[in-house]
Image (cartoon, rainbow, N blue to C red):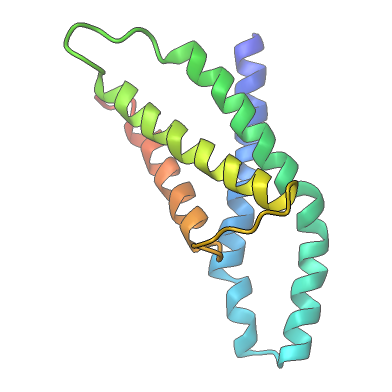
Length: 139
């Protein structure tokens, strides 16, 4: 039962973080087409005011619960090496931990990324994690 509760919390936290990235990359960055610079800055800041309160803690919760979940389902590595499931889960964990470290550094330590300053790379990582989640049980 505890595993199911942690997995549910993980999914909700991941949906909040991923949902922000999807919204930002697919919709918010299109606003300058219809708004002048001042209107765009005001609209984006209005949106980001709420994002800053919810998204960073959601990312941290997603990473921490993900670490617990991987510890429960990874299993032991056999003599033949890692299974396809373990390889996909490892990649998924690496991407999630990278997102968590980047987000924690940026929000809580005020360390801005040296490269990949936009949300495009985190968006690509989230989409990759989504696809890995769908395919890792096939093998």
